[in-house]
Length: 274
Image 1 (spheres, rainbow, N blue to C red):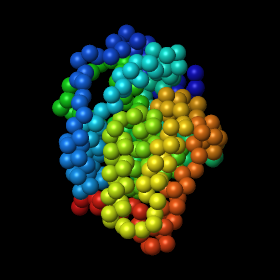
Image 2 (tube, rainbow, N blue to C red):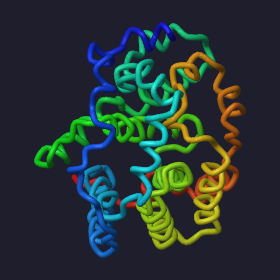
Image 3 (cartoon, rainbow, N blue to C red):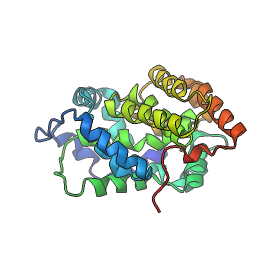
């Protein structure tokens, strides 16, 4: 077992497989595009309001999520990974341990990104917990899979090179759609792209960048199902080659166009509420 993962192995790991694979009390979510549109409009008022993002995903669910989760949870790789990496945020937020890994590694790039943006992996967990505070709780193996898809989000920024500007977030969502095909990923991604186009008239290839990101995600194995602790010590470029992640050319081109116009790409989706 990877030494870093072993540090965070939960005391309850050996009891995990005693839990039901899927709690049948979980609701069957329905597509509600009108509700998704409402929450997207609210998101435009404050792009940092992650609760609106969660509500959009609730309104546009991934139809085959249960099938994908059960397939992975019952696979040899999935069962092994649950023991090795019971809770990713604890691993990813231990920057002291990550910084002991080689210079130029994915671990260092991840720390640089998170520290530069003032983010923590636990922070996203806390935001989701606030959103779900009044919702029923389900105790099953499936919850680990759900959490893992959430917890790799910021890692995707590092692996792809997309920033946290509006187009960067839209591209990460399009990339994620090809891995976790919830309609919400594409809905937010393309709606954000259209909104960017309304705010700044330019030749920046915004929609092409989003389509490119969708293709990059399709060419890459599902990140949530990879052994993150195996990837962290490796050189960043080696990890990208291993996962078949190639440069996002249209995203870079869009930033170059905006740079020549003096436009701040971090202020293109909607201003953060005062």
